Length: 112
Length: 111
Image 1: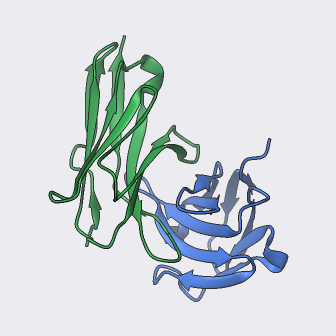
Image 2: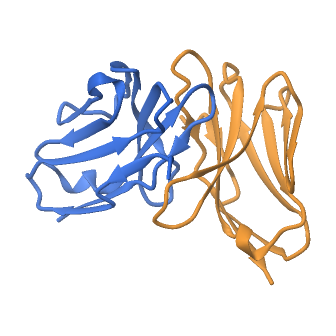
């Protein structure tokens, strides 16, 4: 079963506007959530994270929101830039090993 | 460059051959992970080391797969008797806590 779900395979946004990427999870044991950005033929690059004890974390143009009761998190990118075009993965972990469980990704395209 | 380094970047092999990949983690990171990613999917966890001890293995890791991390530094992932279904991107990551940093991956193609 998919414990982390990204239901939108793709998203297109105009340059300068807000990009909102969504992620849902089912495992209530997850206590840390991360977003990664991936270009083709490269490994994922860490973007931003949030602990389950918080509901918001901001880093420059990137903000992650966590709604624990809904088991939902989102990544906001403002303003969006063409260089943000990539696949974005939501991931979560818990326990001593902290291995990541990933969603299937959302392809973001920022149009100039 | 002090990031996670993986070699080789690409490997093409014939079905039935053995292959070995290497990962050099960020030097102060005690945790090391291997993941596999296929087209259209997110990375899937394979195995985890804390220092030199292999502490977790996914059920995805068949008997043909073996990983080592001697002396708690670099790690190797070996696939014996490769099959076409092993074709994927193999990713290594390292961490100190909850945030893992990935290498650029090794793209394996089994023909």
